[in-house]
Image (tube, rainbow, N blue to C red):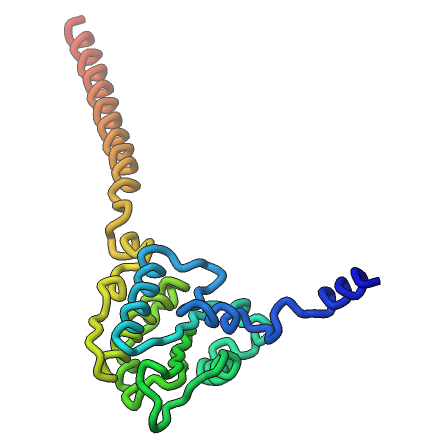
Length: 227
């Protein structure tokens, strides 16, 4: 009977009490990465390292990267509603401290949400708009584009709040596959050259054929003259 009761409790208990994957991850981690496509190197490790350095300086930030509605769990309707989701996520994180008199800077729960449409957040400072407005999110790079935007955003936010945290080089590095877009991939000459060679060969063969025909005609005329 006791075993049956335990099984009932396990079946009734939901996998995630709040239905929000990021809130579960950010209890222990500083960043929630999208499920798909995953953030690739070097952007993921660079963002984790930057958040660690920001915390040591006294500017800890939790970051949620949301690439698709699937990253929102039970709240897909909040996709690209950055601030509304930031408010929800902030309320789900444990024992949040708000900006009030007597609370030290490094005790604040700061939250940055990055989606393809832009940024949302809580407790990011008075100059948050000026810090984030110059940042462009590269949606073609998908999850990597979100991570690169977060790298720049965290550094700019820390600086705006009086902490010396330079923007990492990975924030402006080309995303995977960008070399092909900028002409660094396979040259079009590789595809055009064979066609050019075929045309040249056909032209040369035509010229040789004409010469042979003209030569045969000349030989025939000479033979008639001799006769």
